[in-house]
Image 1 (cartoon, rainbow, N blue to C red):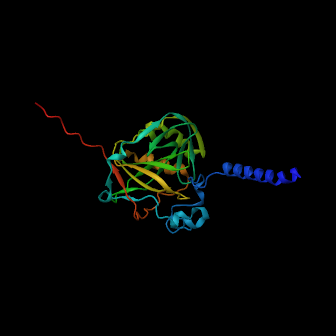
Image 2: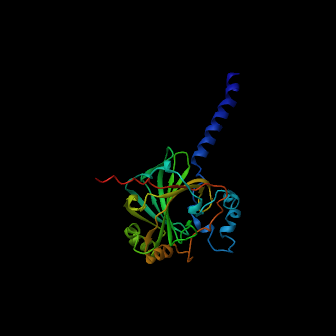
Image 3: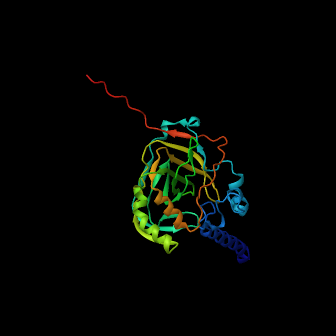
Length: 280
């Protein structure tokens, strides 16, 4: 009699544990798509940005989300928030792999590459990738390139640092990777590049914009904390061309069109100006 009473209980527990295991093993659908060949950036294409939300059920936010990225960072609409403080980065050198995802080149750190600290949460650096032209604009101005440093917290929330570039002197970080990117362009879709220090991605200034948006590629997951550095750095035209050539998609750009701001607040941080000491 006791065995008959316990059997359904044990079956329920076993079923629950099995379901829990499946949920843990299932990859999260909120992260960026690893294989980008299922969509493209061509206006008018059946797989273009205006149709991303129709291609898969889990990509619906691309069409109906109200907190989408990228946006125009219109300086007249920002709220200056000194309490934001300077960006707290704690990065370290780690082994990395360069990958062609279909429409962009991604550098993925395999080990612990450190983290950033935002509003009491630590976000671990996972990867960076490049868009050309830039996805975000400042006061309507679009730039030659934008790098996204993608971070993830322990509770699967995301934070991205974006750095904008105009054509000029070569970017030192891309210069470190040019030989490997060229190899990727010529022969492969993935190549290990050894130990890479993310600190070599220079931000170039302490002023930045902060807003809540989304991933700029499917599934366009919302709730992403964006930090866009105000200062625009430089990249050579040859470096931008190399990144596009290495992808093999023959497209001129991989930038998502601007999305509506709706009722979102754009915060802005700039260090307080210290008044010069009185000279006697």
